[in-house]
Length: 302
Image (cartoon, rainbow, N blue to C red; front, side):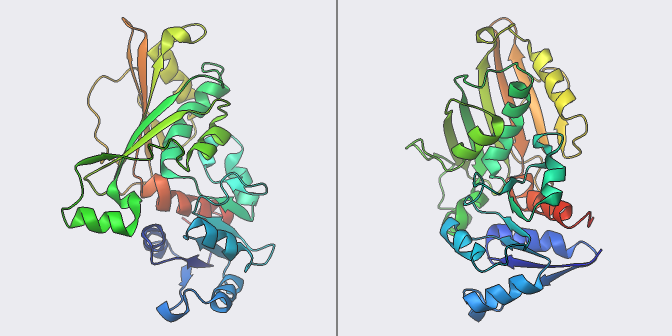
């Protein structure tokens, strides 16, 4: 099929990544505005009207404003945080549940997930849905991302070799991804989320430790792994490693792919486990997820 797509905010990291991926697909043409008109409401509204689908790669407030420029039935994919838990918006994680891809395909308003949230939800949702993990469980989420997720200032600092080797942030414990993690994992108790940035461009690890003897039935690591394998049996972009994993994991392995890997690491002697999701923060965590959602919203364009 052919489709015209307007990326409002094409000059940013996510916008550039989406544009690059879309240019590689047959039948896709991009509507672009020159720099002088990128912030002109009339020019943007005209581009939205001419497009079959608009992608918003904007700060949250600007994304909310952009919605007012679009027709009520216009197809919009928002890559910001603004509408991820908003009424009337479908969450753009096709692997969330068996019917989620169909909901995305039928929707005019889709919110692209956050990168950390994608990994955390992928780990939590299957265990809560299966009853292995209570929705009110005390959960901590530890994650590290490449610096490309931190915006232009952080990217410039690291690429000038001025960035720190490792940096923990959001220590006010109110990171913007927590509401969507709770909403779509089905957690009812707010998790403690500790994100970090490393001195590498892209890639991500999201880790959730568990005391298995605190869970009903005291599930083993192998049982957790099987629960994931069953839940994601038909998910082409998610790979669950069989059994219990005890090797090392680096965040950059899936760079430049749209895949996500799940590992269960466990020690039966202590009833301890660590759940790990690995993804590219620019791939399945951003631009790759956006193109997956665009494909669903417009019909399969791959």
